[in-house]
Amino acid sequence: MAAESDIETAVCEYAEERGYLQRKLKWADKRGAPDRFFAHPLAPVPFMIEFKAPGERVRPDQGREIRKLRDAGVIVYIIDSEWGGRAVVDAHLVNIL
Image (cartoon, rainbow, N blue to C red; front, side, top):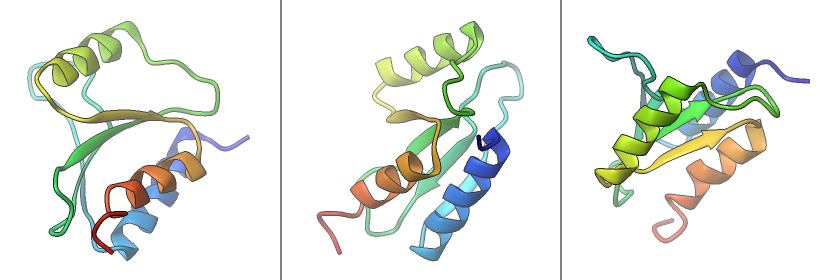
């Protein structure tokens, strides 16, 4: 079974190979920020990903923060596999490339 950090690293490398800008997130005054922010100059909207080990669930503070972000119109994915992350990265470019 892959570790969360392995999944995150693999997806970030995959995204960067496709021209994405990605950044690690950390809220200065709150806990529960999604792990990464992704943007691409040709993609219509940026998005965030919270990475988890396979089968792992978000913590309550992460769930609350993700809900707040989604309620504000931010796209946030919860990913627990490299292939799921790759699919998200590809989906945001599917109508462009």
